[in-house]
Structure formats: C-alpha cells, structure tokens
Amino acid sequence: MLFLNAVKEIENVLGARYKEADLPRRIGRLTNLIGVDTDMMAQIAIENKTVTCDPEYLCRSVLPDRFADFDKFFDLFLKVVRMDELEKTNRVRTKRQHSLVEKWPYRVMNRTSKKDFEILRTQDVSGWERYVELERAE
Image: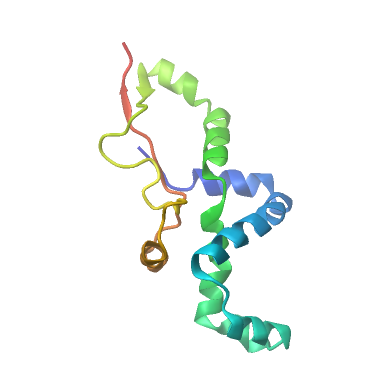
C-alpha cells in the first residue's frame, strides 16, 4: 500500500510555524550533503531579484523538505486515520519487515551519499512516499 501524500498533509496540518522551527535542522543536513552555493548566496545578499528565477535556486528551495521527520509525521497520520482499527476490522496487520519494497525507498538517509542524493533530486519523487506492507492477522 502506497501513502503518497500522508506525510506532507500532516506537515501542512501542523502549519508553517512547525516547518519554520525545523528549517535550520533541515538546511544543516542539506548543507552537509551538497554544500553552499556561494555564487547564489552572493546574489541573494545583494538582493538580486533575478536569482529567484534561477533553476538551481528553485530546486534548492524545495530540497529542505526532503529532510523532514517523516517517521513522526507518518505515525501521527496513522493515529489520525485510526489505522489500528482499520487493521483489526480487516483482519490484517502491518508487516514489521518489508519484503517487497523499502518503507521509504526515496528518503534521504544518514547513509545517503552525495552521488545518490544527486540522483534522487533529479527524479520526480519527494522522499515522503511511504509504503506499508500488510499481512493477514491470525
């Protein structure tokens, strides 16, 4: 089962204040992975408005979202939709160990290399796609 937008929807419910509070941590992780674009920063510092139309600027502006606390958001989503009740009603349970696909196949992990990150950022994935495998409950 694929939950494509559950994480982002929960983050939206929490509001901009939560995201703003978490932004320094996210940007720190991003900077550790790909560094700072000093040319772009110089353009921002001199208030060059055209920098906001630069494709690299646009790309970098959404990259911090890839470093959100997806597990926390997804756990909150499961509580909101009462997944435990849905599982019980349908006599299924979430598999602890996935066998078909990773839980977060496009997520940036601590072990993600710069090369792997560059590949991820060129794909049309967000990182918050979450797979859940179910099995029959006994």
